[in-house]
Length: 463
Image (cartoon, rainbow, N blue to C red):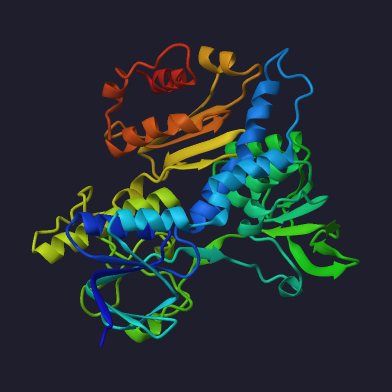
């Protein structure tokens, strides 16, 4: 029998879990939020916030250097960069997050939780929490290690160490050239490390269009990052206090630190999923309301990275709000509209997932990045407008739109260039709202801004 019963028990106290719990409470329910590390989770302490705090000073300095006669000889002070980063993560103290939970009438419970039965969660100390209306799993993801000989026997950085370290390594070898690998390579290179980036493909950011990866590669090389493309690590060892990485092409690299940035996997290993007939370690498959598939009864939900749908904090929070609303509506006996784009469904996961890579140049995209059928028209243009020319001397950037030519609506937008991230939400609105291009033509971009590229793209389409 449960020692304490709540309407909803949320496992995982990061940003996603916080949103589920808060939304459920706003809907009139009681909620317990269980966390075994820090309330606020990965994004607050080891991912989104600290990584961008490390990147921003270097991006600003590079921007200043693109303007003639400004800040000659300016350089980064690593100690000041680290201090600002530490302030953003509250020096890894989650007291303010606990205070937030109390203020939101959410019960913050410290402990490692396992599902031990239907609507039942047991903590590491043996105490049992009952969940009258549902259990929601929001445990996020953990780094995925590749099967490299010797890797388990050496000290490595994961994204956590890369965003929390306060000493600049002499040489940093980065294994993996996705978003984390590219961002952290540039951040640490600008802080003074010699960085060697290992990419299995011909360029960084393999999931993005080639022009995006090529632009980021050029930016990385300009900062002194040495790219090893179309190669992989074959074995790793410790030699005289350094980590030795042997590559498939015969190159050997010695590193003060080795960052393994080869992707993430859902954190479901130790949640008791076998109790409800699911496989530990697998992602939790959910419908658009967050209801977990393959479990009897409608009581187990999940949101965020743990579902494997869209491993981004903002998408996890978006799905979390839907889950909280669904639980509150069902508890009150209200109908739940499961049609696309209702408040109870995470429809955007399938059509309009915005993401920014905060390198210099930035990469910002939403929706499709490539055409997928004959009715899709792809248009590429250089970002060469008055606004970009004023923004930085020698500004280089590219823009791509993917158009459904039958309905004449946007299916995807990609921007690459300095400071393009702030243009992304306009693109997201256009994709989600399915704004007809002939109406979008009347959204006149202000002059002189980088957003003028919208006019050029629509002109190229033929408007």
